[in-house]
Image (tube, rainbow, N blue to C red; front, side):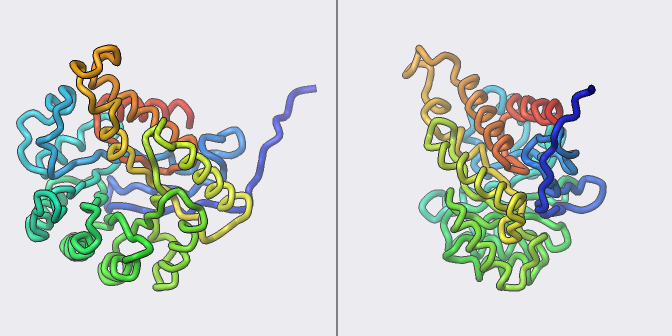
Length: 313
């Protein structure tokens, strides 16, 4: 008697969310099986990888990053170069320099950069703010207006400002909105409900439920990913069926294992290799836990994760 594997069928399905336009548009989500469980059912849309482009990229000193972006002086030039990166599916613009407690770049300058990038590339665009809620509110609205018709994702609407961000990003300008919470299934569900209460369609929402570098409380991320994905698939919870994006690079390049110099930690080995390993490990953990997209930075890490995805799909 031949072996017939038993498959697990789920009644729920993750929403399919389209980003971008034209030939380079991508679909995030859409599956009705657990991550990479291709033995249960085909994965409709493979997980996607975004390349982080920062307006503070001059501070990136890793040799691999310096070499890859050699000659690039603007966000648009870096984004155009990032489009050629092996494994890239979309471009994530990080406007960290807009922070009033930092460089305090003007909203007008950030909008100009976003427009220049949109004119230079054909890949979908994700917008990341400076983590200052007041500044981000203005920044998100202005960029959403300037890039109307580009079908971008703007991160992130939070519990404190979801009305402002949701209204200006999704309702006024038809962009996709990111719902950001911190490793708590109940908070994630509540925020999705509130965004839908503004008449934002579920297929216009992508969740950022929180992430962390592996070894830095990642067990909370893992348990939240598991609970969210099982609720969406096994319990058909429509308030948790939005796809998940994980901004991996922000966490992984800031931890000591990535930032400590070889002079300070000679026993740890090459600094760049450590950072790449941290980024790869964290991205892989997020994807196997349930993330439908990750945002990364280093070309070597991105190529590795793309191979990881292709071999599991």
